Every structure is written in C-alpha cells, then in structure tokens.
Amino acid sequence: MSKTKYLTQHCVSCNRDAKMEIRLVEGADSQVWYRCTRCHHSMMVDRSLQSAEPAAKPTRDSCIAYEPANKYDVGVSIYHTDWDDMGMVTSKERTSSGGNAIWVSFEKNGSRRLIENLQED
Image (tube, rainbow, N blue to C red; front, side, top):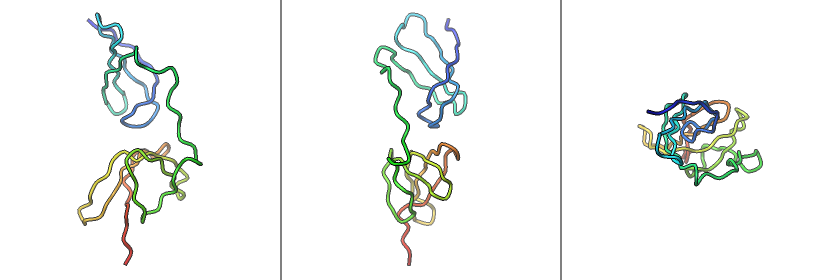
C-alpha cells in the first residue's frame, strides 16, 4: 500500500510551481513518485540525491530578448518585451509552412509557440 500526500513544488514539465501529489512507496525509503496535479506529469525522485537548494529562477538580466529572426536553443531563457514575461524554451519544431517554431513556457502566459529564424523577404 502507499500513502498520498501533497506538496507545492516546481514542475519541470509545465515549468510552474504546482501542487504535487507524492506517492510514498513502502519499502523504498529514498525513492518517491511525484505527480503534478496541473499537467499530470509523473517522475521518480531519489530523495537521497536531491540537493537542498532549489534551482534559481531566471532574472530579467539573464534572459535573451525575443526576436522572431533569432535562433534559440532548448533550455535558453528568453524575455518577450511585448508581453513583459520571461520563459524557457522547452522544445523546437518545424511548422506546416516550412518555418521554425519554439515552444516557450512563460511565467505569466503559460506555454506558447513562437516563430524563430524568420526570414524576411
């Protein structure tokens, strides 16, 4: 049997502080399953390897200003000047028109798809 508890923690999938369901597995003292109640992403965490300090959130100075003509790598923090919001690039994709797009998880606006490497004629 396992017990259910809840904890507010940063979810790496939806990139927000969310309520996490903790499933304590009996017999495994250091391994715990976390499930985000917002996006339902599950992950196993070995508590013996967890660091005491949480990851620092990006600041406005450490972010790159978003421009549709630029290229971005996954994991880069960007700042959207029109929305006054910071976010992290979570994935890249090719659009149906043959262009490039990035998925960015913003603090205020959630996950959004933005154009990258826009070639102006």
